[in-house]
Picture 1 (cartoon, rainbow, N blue to C red):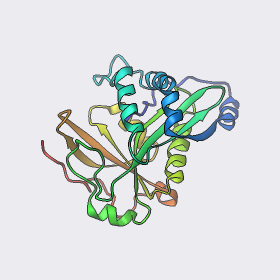
Picture 2: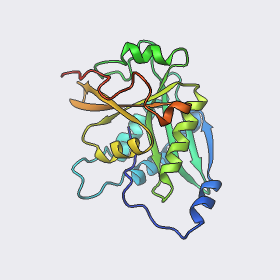
Picture 3: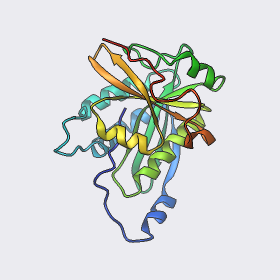
Picture 4: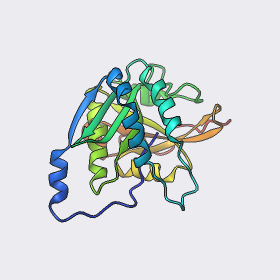
Length: 221
């Protein structure tokens, strides 16, 4: 999962931020269009993931993002929403979670049965990435992107996984309303991942029953 840290926002004159937000348009793109603009998406990824020299965690590079994007586009149910003004300023994409609750191949563990029951019949949508170009209003752009993507998919819950050392992404996601619910192990990359969920609609602002911290089991390697 990619999400930009909230540090380093540029300051703009009073009144300019709301005008910029009004100018942002969100639209869905299909897998063929996503592939066609993959180069621009990779540039957006690099801009959004520019890390501070003080951060120990180093995000994957541009080519690694492109390789992962190509694989994601091929997944059944892949969906993407982009944000534009006079150019690309953000995007969010992902795919539906399987009915057995398994989020990603190569990751040990699945959604607890209680969460699976809680989200039926609308289901869970896994958001792989939320990318936003650095801007004073990037938090609002990110919230609009994630809400639009989940709404378009008629999902009851969003879910994502983040490297536990990616503190910038974790802080950004929590500020956008995501709830930290535990850890899962990825044997392929030998990485412990933080699991986060985002309830859709009126329940987004509150912690719903059954989604308390520690709901998920820590899966050992």
